[in-house]
Amino acid sequence: MVLADLGRRINAAVSDVTRSSVVDQNAVDAMLKEISNALVEADVNIKLVLNLRKKLKATIDTEDKPGVNKKKIIQKAVFDELCELVDCKDAQVFKPRKKQSNVVMFVGLQGAGKTTTCTKLAVYYQRRGFKVGMVCADTFRAGAFDQLKQNATKAKIPYYGSYTEADPVKVAFDGVEKFKKEKFEIIIVDTSGRHRQEKELFAEMIQIGEAVKPNQTIMVLDASIGQAAEAQSKAFKESSNFGAIILTKMDGHAKGGGAISAVAATHTPIAFIGTGEHIQDLESFTPRQFVSKLLGIGDIQGLMEHVTSLNLDQKDTLKNFQEGKFTMRDLQTQMNNILKMGPLSKIAQMLPGGMGDMINQMGEEETSKKFKRMVYVMDSMTKQELDSDGSIFIDQPSRIVRVARGSGTSVTEVEALLMQQKMFARMAKTTKNMQQQAPPGMAGKFSQ
Ligand code: GDP
Image 1 (cartoon, rainbow, N blue to C red):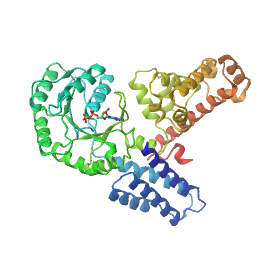
Image 2: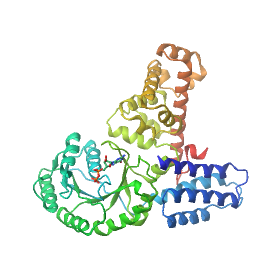
Image 3: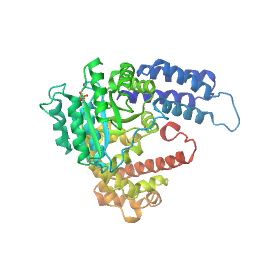
Image 4: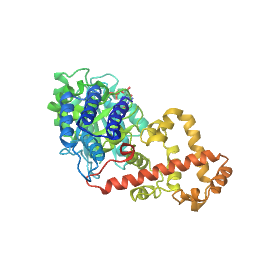
């Protein structure tokens, strides 16, 4: 993932300056130059980059002041400015209400991933207990209705469309009316795209919008289109005045920077990102989480949300995590959940350091085997051991030998597992500290 390269470069630049013995203006300037180059090469609009550089320069004071931790200030400033880039504080993403019909209209160019994303969003809300229906108002592209029908059937979402009616405005209106009458709570309208931004497309979008009166219009934007994202999103904004963006194909080779520029150009928040071709590959977007992930801090919040949406057993993990704790039993619950959660590569992106890298390097099958062995290890632990923070094994190493024997694994494997739990426990503590600080400070890898 190219975005990960951007994260690595920014991380390296910050680490360089914070590791050097003297943090003077020259060192800070070199860091700012490297961060700016990395952003421009990732397709972020140059004006935005220059602005970010100016603001960082103004925030970072290189003069020595007693009691001021300059390194922490630099790390926090970079983190905050990167959040600023993708944040639209004044614009709220719409939150659908239960027991009323919320109409969501999709717009975007052909191939951006509109139809796929409509289904993903339908599944997302269905999992959260909403009654969801989909309307295909794309009468322009042959096969569009069949595609939506196929996706909807697979996901068990009711749909509406027509093989005979050529007027997209009529199909959209009829579909929305039908679902409203049947008390559907979320009605997703897929409109047609074109290869280019054409007058007819925009006129059609306006007419459909007038007919179905959406509570939310979402523009689907392919993250891989680079700098073109800015102009494209501006053109759509003028005609459809969308209130949220969904970035698709963030799993591919997208540099992502163009999309970041689109957010700034239209002052519209990103609501979700598409991270694959499967219907569950949709993640809700929050700037802090996105930047944490970009910088390799790990996205535990995202992981927890994913687990919650799958209705898996979370036991007390979430509560413990918020209290800054992470016991052996929490690790057991999470490992069991991970094995139930499907594609491990997707999970890998959300995990901090070691575990994520392990999945990426070893491949799915081998990792899955390894994870199962980790579960065997924990199955051999006593209740007291599972509820501990792991230190019980350090105090009494004979326990490690017993667990290894009991689970048919090796002492090294048990020790590796204890290391993993320790890492998560550290993260839980850091997360709690971050939440207590106002404004939140830097955490995890980035501050080491
Ligand atoms: P539409 O013309 O805008 O309706 O686009 P489609 O929904 O037909 O999607 C075009 C292609 O992009 C299809 O092959 C999708 O499977 C693919 N696609 C959509 N979203 C994603 C995504 O988030 N990641 C990846 N890798 N592919 C996607």
